[in-house]
Length: 526
Image (tube, rainbow, N blue to C red; front, side, top):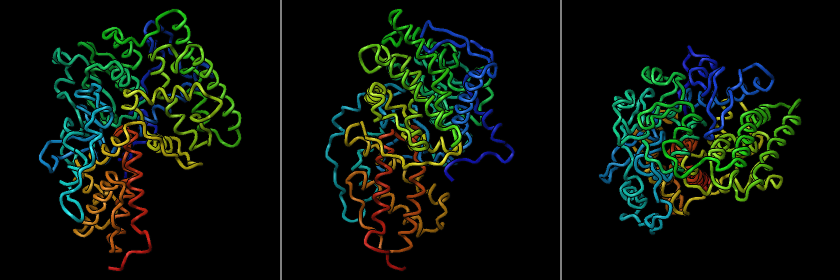
């Protein structure tokens, strides 16, 4: 119920092909680091390249999940006008291309200084009325006007084929010559913000604090004009100062040339040599061995684990060459290159294989690198939370978890992630309630809708006050509420819907309400 199913006439292989990878066969690719180049090897020509094709298949699969399992109605993210009266936007299903306050994104894609803003440290205002607070009261408590003031307003429902959250009109996105000088960069990316290649470009733009706008491409229904503009028909692509560029490596090089400061390039021969080593290691071994380990079975798991650990040890050694937590003395494109894979392995291997990278004493430099990345607002804006990545991995490779996913520590301001999650729900409660009523399986009645509304308010209250509220005395209302929240809990995904920290806080709040629903015994019979 969470995602759109594959068309009955579309096989998984066709779905993967429709989503596509970033690179074609027998084509040379520009390095992610300006000035470093090497050929993309022909797929299947050697055992190594055969493994590379295996890695590409995973990335295809990741993109396929973003396509095949796109939200049925993009419900949580389809904001309507806020009841307080101000137009607020959202990011609960697809990222707004204007300010994404929840993830540190400023107006039109730029980083803002929200993390240190005093408005997030204000005391929570109490509702004006007694009893169950109204949505207007909850909106005031969550400071919805301020947190979501620059989000794009979208109407509910949004058709699955609609490209949501665009900043530029389709007439401009489809005709780059019509873009104005005030639109130096337009990023074309996937709607769900799960594409690892898009993550690289997105991270670079935010790190450089470049003003950019976005156009979201439905990977399962790509516009014909996009296929004409981009020969590969894949994401990402970018319009940079009037020049259309595709493939993340080429885009990163073009960004460096057009916006040289702050530099993300190596600064001398020693740094370039290390960057090339890490790049080669990442493309030839990290993905191959990592996903090989992920898909291993009892007969080859031990060997696959040993091979992957050897790659991690090489990265650990490279991180020790220069002082500081990054591969070079400064944050660079080589960190951006490695990020999507290490992010996914860190999130998934512990759950599906019982092997942890974070917190593992064998890899102190990698752990310092992860911490330094988490401290960067630009990365916090584009990263996924572990549970989102677990869901993607289980869909792509049909893996079963061997351990329970651990909750991630929240790295933002102590109040901000909870308020962010509360503001998203308050600003979009009508769409959320309508989606639950339609897709969760609860009885479609006025009584059910009232129960859904009550339990959504309890979640917001729990986010803002840590109080799960008074459980319902009605057995049927409690049952509808519990089913609704269980459905909603798995609806949320990051970074598509909200920041990783906010997603974790949202799930904690839902859990607290669910636990309190039947606390002290069963509800009364109706």
